[in-house]
Image (spheres, rainbow, N blue to C red):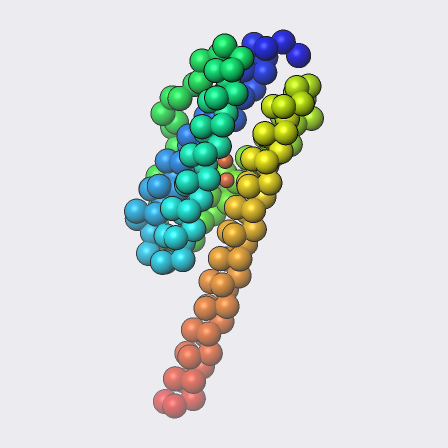
Length: 152
Ligand SMILES: [Fe+2]
Ligand SMILES: [Fe+2]
């Protein structure tokens, strides 16, 4: 694969990282659940590190990192919608890095991409855990409602 093709593929990944940074930072600022707030800020630092690694790989190939501002959704009705959005982004990221790892034939670059892929999978796991926590909280609320009904 020619360097210009690798640069173009790494720039696609870089754009998705910039979008993730924006969405996570926004989520941290506007969401209500303190656990989602913490997840969002911590994950945003990982995405920033990914953007840095990709930018360096691109510039090592004499390419220009495409740090453009993405057109993405930043308005939500509630925390659930925000979590759904970041889950979609993470699923897309896992798919994208798996494709890049299969396509790019440069060992050093692939080894960096594999580390990033492992992080994205960990992000999805964190999201799953938070979803489970919310589902359990909902269960508790339902029990409280039942108790109230019994009292009445
Ligand atoms: Fe990332
Ligand atoms: Fe991620």
